[in-house]
Image (cartoon, rainbow over all chains, first blue to last red; front, side, top):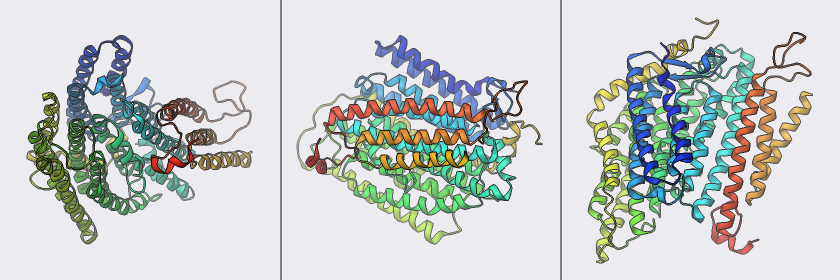
Length: 501
Length: 115
């Protein structure tokens, strides 16, 4: 029953990355070949695991064969398999873009750091142990520090210091939360926690509530939920474009962790925490969405526009998650896939434009090379991000609004008004970038064609189109995933805890 | 002993937070370090405080202290040490590039008080 393939998405990059550092440090071509081959293998693994998770119940992988809850377990279920698939696809696209635009020549060790980052992300999605989740967070963070300052430069380094400082504070809070949870329950295995928290004596409820809110706050920092979003615009706007595109999955790790903990450990039905977390999340999510929309409208540089688009999509995602019903969770997961692809696409397009214009200012400048093609891509991505038909953003928002019929006056108003602001913001940006540049009458400076970069962005948009066309089968699959998340008995049983069942 | 440990954690956290709110990178890094010390002691105490008891099985032991927080705190120490090393290097790089070590990105305001 126990399949060793579950740990492969962690082990493969963990072996490949040091090999790239140690054996291939002088040979960029070899690095590229091995990095792309590794990411391609991750895609194949993710497809296989996605298939396995679809047809089989959740499966635990006991590290060192120590029984849960004493050893560390990795858990493969539908949600983690879906996130693995999303990560692998995004990674492949970003890698193609990086190779095509020569981003990996602007600093050293890009591919090794990239693979270490994938190792951390995959581990965070797979782990079934709360402390192990912390460790994988640190793995992905330390790689992201290196990627964030790739290519260096004054502003990027200073933004990097801020980014590290925020994340160190978040890690400290994470440890405080985990230690409190351990002090109350005596376990850190997530399935065991689910059982123990559900049967917690009355007197310990206050402590576990503090720990739960601390833990969610840490994940909210990662997911850029207001009021903990302040680190994101500066970081993403100063990070290299393709790295920011990869970071589109980093905010989703926060969302994934909140989804996992609020369905498994602290569901609204648990007497110790009740609906406390979801009640706090709804207003924060709506403010996040509004802030992202206003930020898009007010952004004066392109990278900040993209960063605020990312914040707005996290707002929609958290709004859907705050309902805590299977239907809303399914809508949230659909929006999560859409928002990862669309946010990554907008960061890559912004990088193409800033690279050709030599700055990111949102002003009328002479035309750029390949302007028509880039404008078309920007237009399509803007439609997807703002949630206009016909792309998946529209379906995603429709699903979210359909799932949140309880309080339409407030929630629907915020979602629709912010969509309107986003349309305005993108229209303003697009017309300044592409139409007003014609008015300057100057000829574009020639630039390398970089066909593979366009293939990469086209791949992301193709993903959005497929997500739109196959919305039916995908939502059916997601409905089953959401149902499994909200009835986690199979997940808990897979851990084979002693004493129970 | 509980009161002593709790006071120590509280004091470390308070100093850490105060230093973290300073404007230059050096106090911020010291603040982060103090905060990580506080959390390390906190993790250690999460397995309950016991004096003179072994964490591993021994034939002469009267009782045991919880070994798991000790393993957790080791992991946390290693990680926070590594992260501190990264931020020190990054701060150094930012200082060399920018010519000053203010944490915020607002350069116009910084003109008046360069070190």
